[in-house]
Image (cartoon, rainbow over all chains, first blue to last red; front, side, top):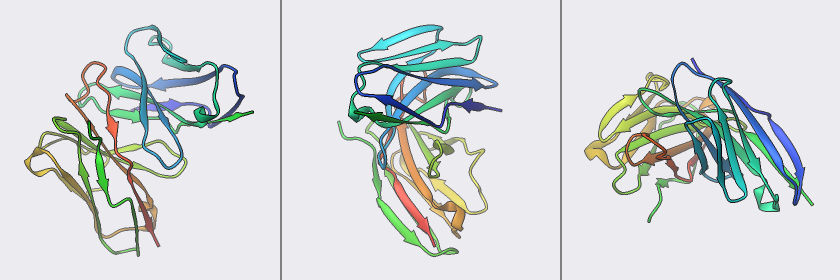
Length: 110
Length: 116
């Protein structure tokens, strides 16, 4: 089976850095994805990790440790528009579809 | 590039009624997914198609839910009869090659279903 744990809510200040953690258990691992979802909108792709280490993309970075079943999403220079839910998802081997966590709702305050 | 199109955007029905949702994936995308997202939760996979064949429908409540993807392009998801707990956003997504490598899934805006 699969299980993903991530904090339900986080609050951070505009201009600051925030780290959203995700731990997972899965029987077959074929990559970890982070998606951003604004209220009432579709999830949009942020990042992908399949090997251990850090992937950087502008203000967003994502880290993966496969041996620990752990990932984090790092958001730098927070902006008000970053207020959204951040979904951690594991792609399972075989069918290659995504299993999502419940998401972390981030609120950025002035 | 046009995104994943879904209709309708909103639907309100009474319990025990039937409802259908439509999805048009991104052109050329072989894989199509239907997800159910209940308020406050992450998306849950209902069914995955590769072209017009079913790859994974292990979490589809087959006594009331059905889906098809004729001709390997558009897809419809049907609920008959609906229950109160089916109230959710139904998201359609597509990907180019079935999820190999870093190919991400692109999501439509979803259909918000309310069952009263």
